[in-house]
Image (cartoon, rainbow, N blue to C red; front, side):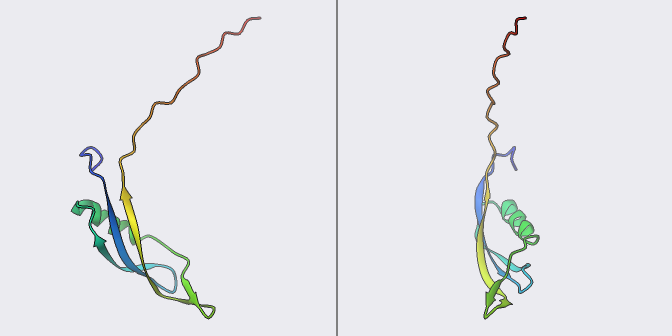
Length: 87
C-alpha cells in the first residue's frame, strides 16, 4: 500500500473484555480504502488493554480508536563533515 501512496484513518469500535482483549471489532468510519480497513481490524485483534473497573472489579467496556495509516517520509540526515586532525 505504501508504493501506491495510500493513506487514511480507520475508526474502529470494539469491546474490551474483562481480561483486556478486544472483541466485536467493527469499522465505525472507513479510511476510504477497504484494504486499510481490513488491516486495521486485523491489527486490533492483537491489542490488549488494561480493562475498565467498577467497584474494584474488571468489567467489559465499549471503546473506539483511530488507526492512522501514514506513509513515512525518509528525511535525509545531516552528517557532520569529517574534521581534520593534525598531530
